[in-house]
Image (cartoon, rainbow, N blue to C red; front, side, top):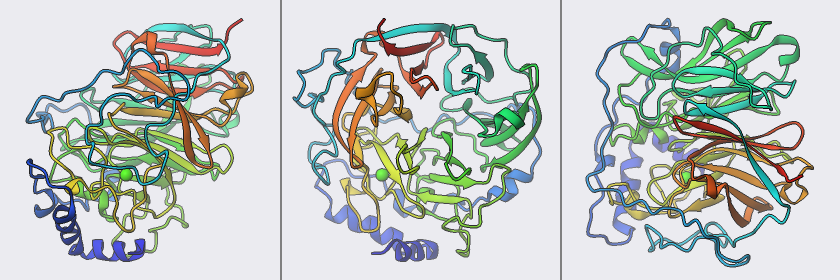
Amino acid sequence: MKPSLILAALLTGTTLVHAAEGAKAEGPKTEQQPRPWAERPPVDPTLLVEQASREPFTEPNDLPLFPGLPPTAPVQRQPTPREVPPEGQILEGRPAVNPTQQPAFPGQTRAAAVRTATPIEERVVARGLSHPWSLAFLPDGRMLVTEKSGTLRIVTQRGEVSAPVGNVPPVLFAGDCGLLAVLVDPDFATNRLIYLSFVGYRPKGHALMVVRGRLSDDDGAIEGITQLLTLPAHTGINHYAGGMVIGHDGKLYLGTSEWISDETRIAAQLPASPMGKILRINRDGSIPSDNPYVNVSGAEPRVWSIGHRDPEGLTLDPKTGGLWISDHGPQGGDEIDRVEPGHNYGWPLVAYGKRYDGGLLGGGRTQFPGTEQPAYYWDPAIAPAGITFYTGDRVPEWQGNLFVSALGGRHLARLVMADGKVTGEERLLLSHNQRVRDVKQAPDGTLWVLTDDADGRLIRLAPRG
Ligand SMILES: [Ca+2]
């Protein structure tokens, strides 16, 4: 089925249930029946960005938090092995969570181990950051660093950490909520504009928001903050995505999530909903006239692509300028996607792995017409967050490689790429045993990493000596 036909079916709200039932009927037999998510009506997934964005900022509220759906069985997370197999052998030696599933093409998972030949120094430049979430380089080489607990700081490459930058809006710090991504405007040298994504307080709960403001001349505060985008409010604390990037086209791309509940998950498939999507807006918050759904009746005009679960990492292909994302999958279904406008990345119709309660999604189905396959997936999961392609000349053997932060995996994954496919994988920073949250390349070709911890670290990777 063509994506446009799927879209039409989804907009009418009828065929989706049939698709899910078909998936169940044809999927592998299992003792655990999938949850009847498809049979339940979604909880108003067509909540509109327009309406939410008109509401003013609000102070922290004391509404009770809904902690999300706890797994009904203890999750058996397998720790990442600290020893690495010889080069050429398959890197991942642990059993798959869902061994009945097969990759759609060779090399889609379990790539061969590779090893960086250049001796690399992993230098901890700063410590004591409060769950840092993302970093962005300023033109002078300093970094803006968000702390998930709600502060923005400026850090020098020598490790000097500033006091909190003033005027950051209040954020909810719980679960996946907090101060998330920071971006520097391409014209920062003249306009000093920066962008923040965060989970802010709303009159009825809290919501993923994007604001823009000007970094004051003395770097001490953000001035003239304006809302660019606000998602519908909710009271859950899990799955808010929030990854951002500014494309070569000058547009701002944002990953959004689906709140991880059975009732709301299906919103990822609905073009009318901003949830479970990559959204694309102009840098002043307006809607680009060439967005794929901009002229589709009933669709959210900011939607760029659909069918995502929890995309926290967005980056650009250095050769094509194309968008790549990391997406937290279910247990054994973390993935990397090359995102094309208007395409459907499958969640929750198809998924690798299993639910965290052990059940199957879509009957265990991994392929469905009109949905795109991930470029790569991990089973067992690594919990991928920030990603970046390496383009520097400090480590020539890294050029064109995709670096992937691994929270649960507690390492930095290095993917060797060829023609959009993964041909080799390496695990870096294993000795630090830290949840790796973000990775960015400095203008000088060094690689910089944040770890997610109450004593969060900023680590610099560069050739030794
Ligand atoms: Ca997918």
